Image (cartoon, rainbow, N blue to C red; front, side, top):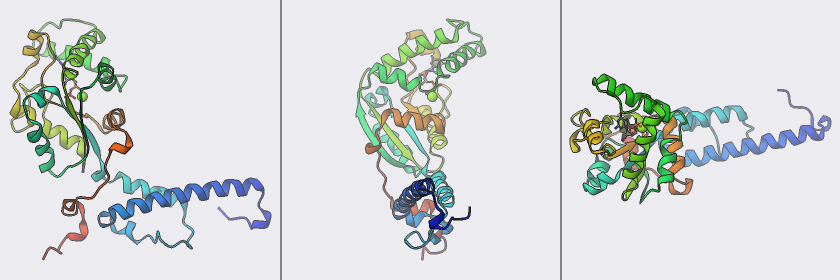
Length: 271
Ligand code: GDP
Ligand code: MG
């Protein structure tokens, strides 16, 4: 868009231009913060931008798209993990954390607390479809095994399930954590294993450390004990992280091991 000479600018023009300048300045500052913190890890084209030259007028849209690309790199993906009360009681905290650590994920937030029933109900119903989807999935699970489900209404199935889940999750301390790294959501789900320990793959945490089943837990009238909660999708992770953590509880820091995982500039420079 051609820039009008100053003398022909109306107050409105000046106002919208200064708003744009302020917005552009904000994005530029954010990019700088990001670049300073992650400079060694940024891909080449991003490093070449002369962010420090105050005299160069930058295209604000270009800034915005580059900043978005910087933030969207898969290495910044985050996921929420909760070690449930049975994980704490089984003294498996170190083992569970070690599994996520050794694959190269970075722990960026962690706290221990006893959750309230309200927080647990909100956690499971952040997605308004969760009640229906989980109810239908549970009913299908009974049919697939040739069993008669205790209820035919999916919402009623979930209401009972949620009550048991809440009793279980509020029974003692849990540890909530945020893990960051490439494809964090899928990687954590893969390491954690399927929801029902009876059928979770060997080598996964649930497959290796717990032997519960829907059949056993239904017989006992309790929730299935599967040690861990892990976000099921990137959207779920974003909602759950905002539900359990404040922004000031999340650490932004570099690990020396980040370089060997992500830095293309290290290639052919190790000796
Ligand atoms: P997750 O993401 O692997 O924890 O599984 P979901 O999000 O689908 O379900 C949340 C929780 O609900 C699980 O951890 C189980 O405790 C419970 N749950 C889910 N599906 C079933 C089911 O078919 N039967 C029973 N008894 N519990 C279930
Ligand atoms: Mg889930």
